[in-house]
Length: 295
Image (cartoon, rainbow, N blue to C red; front, side, top):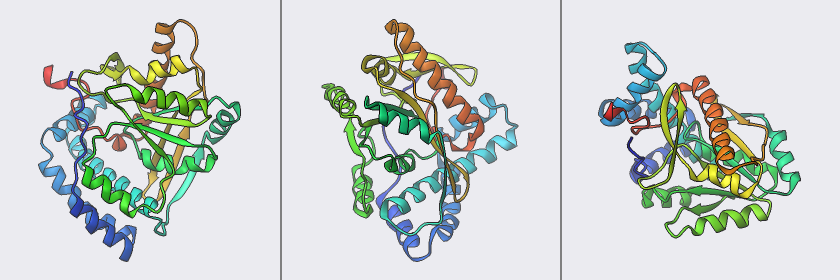
């Protein structure tokens, strides 16, 4: 199966145009322009189109027509998540409404004074999840690959009013492991995606949507090694302006290492699959997740 390449698409000029529209026209005109941009990517997305088609057609058993239409909708929702992030990060007035499900679990994690691992996926909007988590009153650390184009990152940071989360970059010298350990020791939340890996990463295999897939072993090993509470979290859009935040009840994974690590992975996949089935248009996966090119 192929690995993710660690890159995000987009360009600085596009962000500047949309930010101007957001500032002077608001979110709905920006969504209108986005519908055209999404159609462009729908037509010229190359391999990403094929991988999305297989997801909808083979994994979810959609009809041919519904699969094709769902690909366009997926691009449109993905664009919305980026625009919504720009609005919230820049401090612009916004019309969004938020519903919280499972927030009490996260508050209980803070009270345990053991820190916590929050595992998510490229489903919905992770940045907005982080924005919502700021109300818990504890430090937030986000573990990520430094894979976005630097000019786009710089531009997003330039319009950000405040971004309270601290970034822990994954490095070859494994220094990020010590940073994670220190954050947990200080009762902070450490947030990371657990659905993608880079070439050379240690992986684990389990079923997702009735097909074997590989996952990065790192997040699940960390959960067993540090013995901190683990919750699976997602921020999803129910409608254009409504966000629904989900968090599962926290669990500490103990017992034999191999068994415990496998248990974390299985629980994570169960939460991830349930979210994908409920919000199929909001899984933003554009690479060969199941290794379909080798089938």
